Image 1 (cartoon, rainbow, N blue to C red):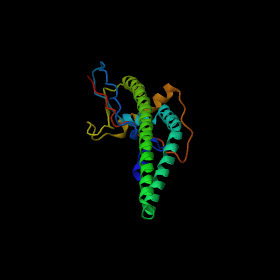
Image 2 (image 1 turned 90 degrees about the vertical axis):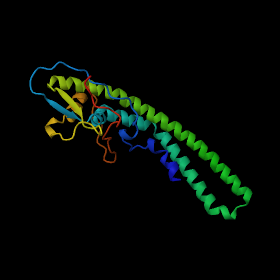
Image 3 (image 1 turned 60 degrees about the vertical axis):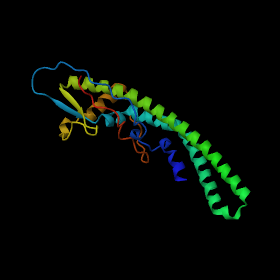
Image 4 (image 1 turned 180 degrees about the vertical axis):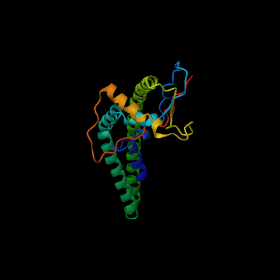
Length: 215
């Protein structure tokens, strides 16, 4: 029943932020600012990474996954039961009467329908909360990015996390991702989570977050 187990994947504790928020609204669009005449100063940011690596993002991610852990455990138990029943029906089918075989198949089908319904509900609720959290956080991180860019005199900031975006090559000195994450952490006041040797922190934010573009 690997296909059944796959339905519980969105509730797995090790799931990264990028895997549960592929359909988020676009990141806030940039506001054109008046800049002094002179050489252009261009910065590069991995906006998705910045959002996910903030202390607030990692804290909220951990809280939501913890909230849904009981549901994940329940779905796993249901999936294990379905797997056992299916294997029993397969291995014992030849020794069962036609009526017993049909009855077991009916019970298996009914349990699978309940599992599918519960799994879909849990998945939608989980993804909904994650997307709402990341969407709100993305907006706040963007505000810090905009303020940082203005204070540091950047003429333009490009998002390198976008596939097919304008950034082909960027020197490390132009990357302001960590600086923006640090600035946001300082502003939010949210402390870093304690180190956990067995838990991998999410490394990227939604793929749908768009780079800021002047309008």
